[in-house]
Length: 249
Ligand code: ADP
Image 1 (tube, protein in one colour):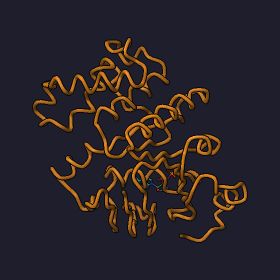
Image 2 (cartoon, rainbow, N blue to C red):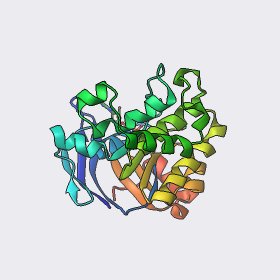
Image 3 (cartoon, helix red, strand yellow):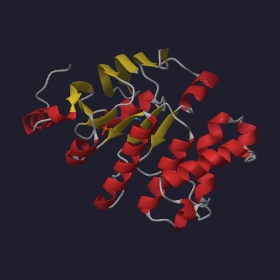
């Protein structure tokens, strides 16, 4: 379970990207994070995996407040959170297998990671993850020669190889042909259903959210303005969310 309490993020230039956000996310959820561009969706996900330092508030993940973590403790927490980026963030000159093995880096010292000293278990987990995303025959292929859709599948495999307790995806289909959305969302949902790991996905196309997600969180100008089962996301509510006419929850 994730419990976010009074989460606020002010960037140094004064932008209030998140303003007193309170929400509880049960285990095994599949959540669409929605709202206009600039509403704070990405900052919210990045606070959850601590790519961004919250200004105040707490983020309880499995009972541990991860908001104040730093140093080694932060490193240990970050390896338990998979993150799928819009732009994949892969090392394109390396093979699929090498990129997915990077998901295991958090389990090693920086030194052994740099030397590529992976264990048998790391290789087994990486190969399993590659198989899950259907790219076994591309294991030794350089990422640069793959299509965008295949590259995003590699990025999902890398996140799965981390064996995360939480999976976050920040507009993972935005750089891809819309026809590939079902592949990416299907992989994330399959992982969610098989492992019971919560997935939070920043998603633009509400049609996709309705088809794949269980619940939604809606942001407007840094505030959480609506949440609940995806079936409650009526077109009227959608209009209010995007018009900015709702009060904070
Ligand atoms: P969304 O993901 O909903 O598009 P973001 O979380 O990216 O929204 O951004 C929320 C607000 O925070 C926006 O006003 C954005 O310009 C601002 N913002 C995001 N990152 C930074 C940053 N590093 N420095 C200053 N402002 C930022």
